[in-house]
Length: 62
Image (cartoon, rainbow, N blue to C red):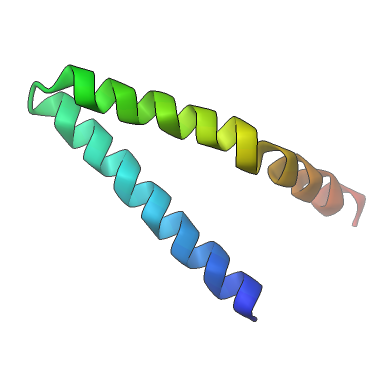
């Protein structure tokens, strides 16, 4: 249960940061928004990508 709560909170935080980056770009601050998007992409590939791929494989084998 705690893993699910952690994942949901993590998802909302990441979506919030993504929304902030897009909002920054829309408001004209392309440098800030671009930097946040780049850092989110790096975070995804360094931290989340391996776990996401494992989960996809697990779901397909069921």
